[in-house]
Every structure is written in C-alpha cells, then in structure tokens.
Image 1: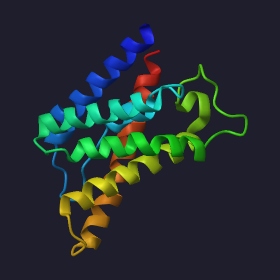
Image 2 (image 1 turned 90 degrees about the vertical axis):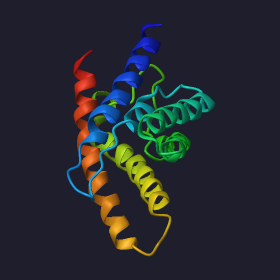
Image 3 (image 1 turned 45 degrees about the vertical axis):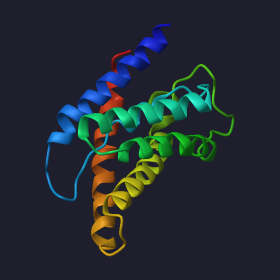
Image 4 (image 1 turned 120 degrees about the vertical axis):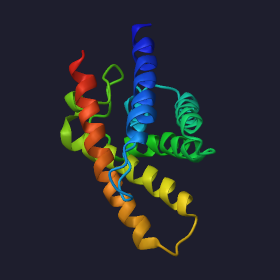
Length: 168
C-alpha cells in the first residue's frame, strides 16, 4: 500500500514539475527538458504491462491537459511505456531482475540506468519532435533539438532520480 502511495506521489510531483516549472522555462529553441517519463521508467518491474501502458497514457494526457498539446505527450508516453519492456529485456542483468528491487541506480548501477534512460529518452524525443515538426524538411534542426533536449532531459532525470532515491 505504501509503495502505491509512493508512486502516486511520484506521478503528482513529476507532473507538477514538468508542467509548472520545466514547460515554463525557455532556455533555447533547441532545449526542452521532459522529466515526466521518469515516472514510467521507475515503475516496478513486476507491474502489469497493460497497467504500464495505461499509466504512460495517463501521464501523457495529464501533461497534454496542462500544456494544450492535443495528444502529443499522450502518444509519446504510450510509446515509452510500450518500449520500456523491450529496453528492460535489452539491458537485463545476467541473473535477471529481482522482483522486489526498484529500477534505480542503487540496485543496478549508473551504467545500466544511463543506457536504460537514454534509450527511452531518445525514443521519446524523436517521437515528440518529429510529430511536432511533421516534416523532414528541417531534419537537421529537428535532430539538433532531439540531441540537445535528450542531454538536458537526461541530466534533469538523473538529478530527480537521485533526489527521489535519497528520500528513502
């Protein structure tokens, strides 16, 4: 029960940070930080795949509701939730995941979390920015946005991840 409350709190905090802080900061036309996908990334390994998809959709719809982006983040959240299973399989430790361990740096190390996070972040950002431009005409501009925003998101996600871990 306490774990469920913890994840509800993560959902609310990450949603509020994304919509009330990060979406309001304009550093550059090339840089957008998206921290809300950390919620999807941190869900327990034994979470039902359909529930992960539903929670990814719900998180994306919530960001869309605050940002008036008409389903852009809902589709990206759903995509990240879908790809999460494949990323977990791809980066699975040799002895597999333990069902009672959280998906975090403390349990699986920085290298594992970095690969897992950057894979999901790049997929998310490619989806978001190519849907946003809906064209390959400015592909270099879009790829620059993907690259710089991915690095920024990775830094912010690592910061929040370490902050959430230290609260235990």
